[in-house]
Length: 589
Image (cartoon, rainbow, N blue to C red):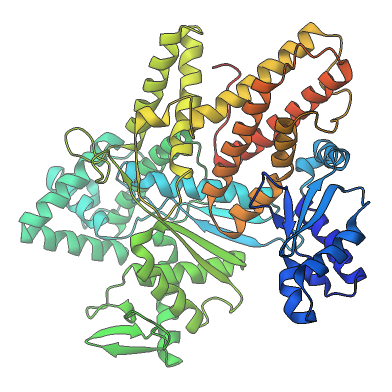
């Protein structure tokens, strides 16, 4: 099903062509003066130079062709040459009916579906998820759901950090604490225990302790580097410990991502691509891409058009060690081999922009990915406290993500219990849903690249541009539908959406019709905040219509059924959008 604006554009383009003008002049846009019209076309202004004719004369010619078309209620030419349009109520109602009866709101899947890999999450094993992981997870999940809804094949990858110095630090700290463990005995030939010698709680204490020790104790730091080297070169005991670390960590990570409503299709790790590195590096050397610079092996990626310096991409340090750039390039090698993607999207802190510029250019220059593959960077800003600084706990530490989710859910629970609107058990479940919506919408409604202030009180408000306000709108619609089915012999599935009977109903119908535009805009710009803007505008339009219209007191039963039919479509659109954003509405609030 075509977008409404595309259908109108085709009609106006034909109008221009029928008058002997270039059809492409008929491009239609949303009106920037909604008080005057709903859609507009400024093509006559551009046509004036082309045809040496006053724009108002061109506009009048076209309006003459469009007058009488059943799509329009009104078409006028306005000085100096604008064409203003208002849609016919019958045409708009029919379009909404087709949306309502069609699958997926009448939105056709992409004509040329892409295979898209989304790299989001990126936690290091052996560390708990904290607020610093929030934005990547929430933004990445929403983009994955959006791409998938539009018909693309999407592979979401958590991309775990599991192969760096943190492994050596943990292993060495564990060796000092429990030297009797078989993993540290060089002559041990038996099977290693199936159960890990630590819990997730102990593991999460071991890493920061080891990290702090390495900064003060040079000897310990050297041993940790040696342990990392041994692990990466196949030490049997260290590999067994590494597997324990992975199993314990990943189990905990999955549990906490589940609380956030975030899932991944694959759980790939840095270690998975180590085998690709030697051949990749040798090929770059053999083909003349890589050269030595100050002892390191690098690939030059600067371009003549650069306004700022872009340093070479380092493949190997002077001691032969790999870096994140090496691993990220090898990951691209693996993704090309496994998925042959059309697009790879990285949802990462915007401060890593230079790193990914280097990696993307190196991958293209050396042929790691095909020329047509789109390598995209969606960089996000920081979530800050009310002091404007990165969000911290009261004691100054980095807050664990599960504590943040609990805090916002408890705040919502307190608000529900103040109103005494439901039983305690129901209130707790509802608070979790509302809290998650508040958290996700509070994040996603901000432009990804911008920093924002995390304010629990503002986020959980039932008024304004917040998640709970969106949910309250959906719950209100559910309540009206339930009341209608209880108090009448008719059901919401009967009847048809009718031409709008008021200005607020027309405004609501127009906004509902534009859901496809909102989804495609969010897709093209990789901007979930665009979808949030649409959801908020639609909620406002519905609530205005609701307050101005006596739906349940309407005496005309056909008109009342049409209202209910329209409400059902509004609810369907809102629920589709919030599902893409990663949350859902309760039945009561």
